[in-house]
Amino acid sequence: MRLSARSEYGLRALAALAGREAAEPVPLRQLAQSEGLSEQFLEQIFMELRKAGFVSSTRGAHGGYSLTRPAEEILIFDLLETLEGDLAPYECVATDQPECMQVPFCVTRQVWLKLRESMQQAIGTMTLAEIAAGRTWETASR
Amino acid sequence: MRLSARSEYGLRALAALAGREAAEPVPLRQLAQSEGLSEQFLEQIFMELRKAGFVSSTRGAHGGYSLTRPAEEILIFDLLETLEGDLAPYECVATDQPECMQVPFCVTRQVWLKLRESMQQAIGTMTLAEIAAGRTWETASR
DNA sequence: TCAATCATGAGTGACTCACTCAGGATTCCA
DNA sequence: TGGAATCCTGAGTGAGTCACTCATGATTGA
Image (cartoon, rainbow over all chains, first blue to last red; front, top):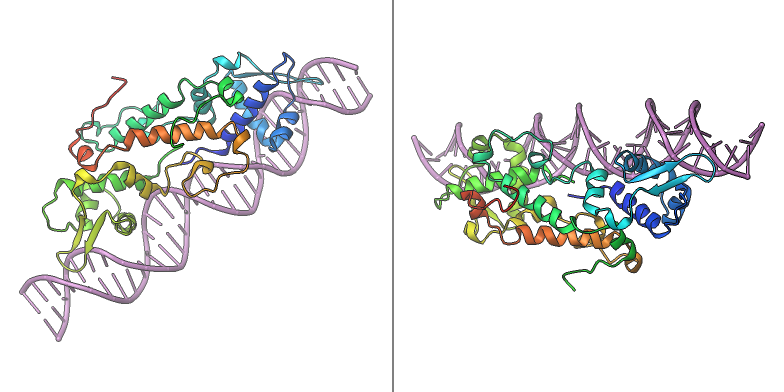
């Protein structure tokens, strides 16, 4: 039950991008270097983010990536859904999954549903701006 | 971000076991057949459950597995931790992980922490008895 | 024209997952 | 006492995924 490195890297790089937002696009190389990530791998990740509409790209010299919206309006939940493909803890509660035949008798579906809901609640209101600023409080266990 | 089939199978078989709890041990073959699972795979899973203390085994003819405690006292959270190994959404918040050096500057840790907390809250009070009886309400989205 | 950048697609080694296979140990019952 | 039923253990395996790398092209600014 682990999220992939894509999510970690994607969030880090986006937070870095949000941090230095100055209307000018930031080249990937800079983001990769400042976060210590492989540039080519990050490229793949940013392709997805671009296709999903979170960032826009400018080619050529002085090019790079920028956020398409203010970081305050970008939800971590939406980012993770894009980066992970889907946040469902089990296939049967994936968003694109047709309802399975055994739902009325299924003992596990209720568990997966509850898990998915709780995750959605947890990060459904967290924004990129918040985590970039480190302003999200650790709400428990300390 | 998917839980493994071990968790699904383990929960299903345990729920079935809880359902027919009659003091007598239930052979794995019966559980596997009633749930349509591979007996040998289920064997591996029940080994773990036994080592973790959730079930006890009786060898020989008329042997099988039984719950060591009433299903009302077995938390889904504990089961999933055993079946998955760990419920942390990312390495850096795993229970056995030494605190990483970059915590003060880390933008993602807060996300993983919040996710883990929310999962724990969601299933930290759900019991095996509840899911076996299908009594856990779908609290949202319908 | 050249350097900087994004864009695209293919390849790859390591790892994990969901099993299967083979054989052994223990217990009950006829 | 023998054999069937069951748990126990460890090794193997094919398919898939992950986290990249590699190679090459297209676009743009100076």
